[in-house]
Image (cartoon, rainbow, N blue to C red):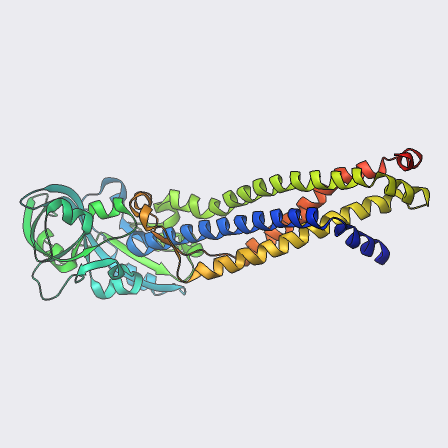
Length: 405
């Protein structure tokens, strides 16, 4: 076996140019595949974290039928049960009670339908990093009466700046139309332009006062330490809250669940496509090597070398080339991903287009250990499959005819 390994290794370097060219192709293909893995994983996780931090949290509690009807009168009835129930969650990270209304926002130049979120800054700080999205002004400034935070996009449409006056109009809990003047205390920008267009933030107590009930809560947003346990925790809470509807982020955003669950699978398909292309290159190269060495292989058979060992030698040569190229490609891919892991890849010139789909302009690639291991296994499997046909072609040679060629 040792002799066979040494012979295979020497055969790899008999034609250095061809072997190095094939290794380079494998290296670049694997490196490109891993970079795609890293970018996709980074974009998916940024998309997930952005939605969780800015909108969904991991779990939401609403009054029954609120999600389907969106009526202001459907306020949470299980307030006395919610806090004790939340205290039983071992993985609880934080929660926030929110008051929500749908209405109109208007300036002297423009009006638009919006979702009004009444927030408590102290509670929100436990579950959200939304203040990091503030680009100008202050997040719900205490020094301003009736402060409101709107997006840059909406401010441009309304033609208002910090300190500008806006009017919010909506229904109170009795169904009566109510309006109030608010002043812009801050402007924000997230990676999701659709969110920016329709969401404004006010202080929770200001909105509750206008609704006519200081205990009017429409949503409890919950953050836990492990997002994969959200469905399980939501199910437990739902059993404890008879008048409430408890949903995890998977149910609230099915498209996000599909993206998180299937994103890696899609990338494996891309990697397999890359490896299939490399497989044909390996197959062609090894077939050429076999045809060039017909006399040599015939001589080895004539001297008594078993056909199984001939096939093993061809397969070992293929494995050496593929694994060397694959390992170098994996190392190169990891180095490139690590280089951009902290500073990110800047796609600012495509920021508006990316924002339409909810993605950040700067992407921070990530690569899981399991992705590296699976890639290495795929390279190994590809090299084995690519070596089968050249190995079979070699063992089908007739020694007498091969020597005469």
